Length: 314
Image (cartoon, rainbow, N blue to C red; front, side, top):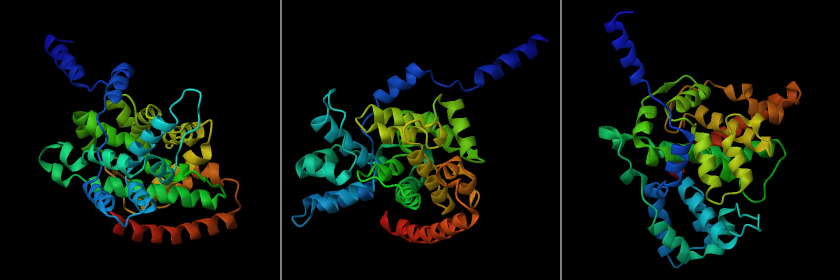
């Protein structure tokens, strides 16, 4: 190899993106500033809090539309009322958390919540970045996670199912706020499928968005059940405590993408790909062919309803 060839080879190696170390990632995530919310949701919640005719249930419904506000409400209530090392009980329900906190604390929380449209700087196209799609995808996945578990005859009285679906992509929001330059690189990528997206995330960052979100939530007093589901929602078979919940989130994620609500990544999702997912196999793999046909038919009706809902709530 000539000296020129060696120089070119060395230059190519130096240009290759090196993923961050675990220590750097943990430090950066721990220093993550307040999670941001969508402006339209912040404004709606502010109006409700200022109204004398509002009820806690109405306020909780708006908070449930927002991954950031949901995380911050659950973090706050669990750190205040259930923060003892001896007490493993944690609240996962938004309305229950809102009752414990009271309207004044929720007002304080909202006042300290930044708006995503104002704090992210992604260059000239920042105003066109599809943050509304991220929120719609999160909400769609939350609704469908609960619907899928209902079909599997499994229920969660504490809202863990809905919250796990809502927060499954929180790691992407953390990336945008904490690692804006790396997030910008990811936002320009085109992915052939979810597995490809995860592979590129690990190559560029070191962790994928699921692990980043799970670590952040674990560090902010969110129940282990939700953290585990989010960590493994792309590989539900690796979940030790509740593979059914992680599976439902995976299937719901794919179904929401099938509706055309992709979130913030350019990822191809083929129609009915959820039927080939690990999550579907875990939840419904033992069903007979006629049972599977009935399930998919019921899901198609559900998808029509959820599609209409998503177009009207954000």
